[in-house]
Length: 259
Figure: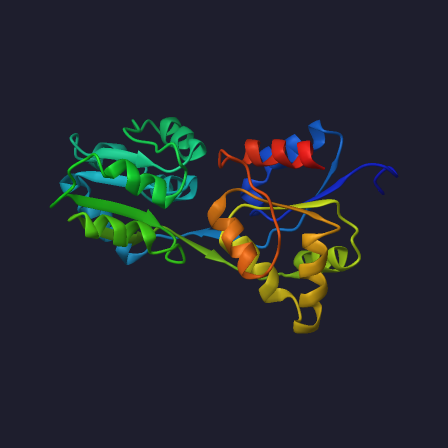
């Protein structure tokens, strides 16, 4: 079924299990979503995660950087809430991460105003975490900014791989998206993490790159969720915009205000 003549087409590159909110917002604006995930999330019970669980009673802090880490832990360790040291404080980056934590019965002690690793580190500047044992479950493809920053503050950090962020095995949707970008058949595109950007360009052919960059910067509105994702787009010479508050809702509001 084709979209009506004047209906806007918005490309969504989020993983399949993270698209519902975005699609709902797109449809509420009477636009059409083109779903082409450039990122796949796989929950994993790795040895490093097992080690973190074994040490959960000794933790001073536990940091969740995304909802996926919380979902992964509770998938493999449903009784995790009972394993945590009652004096362990919990930090979450992002409103959605905090909400998911609350759904699993976790009390979130700290959510930075700036939903980035830098924002959380800034919050910790007023907290003495020297010699603290901090658990950090996440994907290993994430930036080193947070663990390195915590270590500089004197904390001992346990990194645990709780999920894998990878390029989808089937790249057909991404290839179709690339064709739509080349032909300027979409009105806007959203990126919610650096990997959603990198994986798109990984699938693209070298000869397609200049036209993709040109169209994403001119005929197509490119919207990033925040400054870190925007920086990745800039590394590919793509001009994009991002909201003041780094949430999906704010990103989509900015998109439709600008479009």
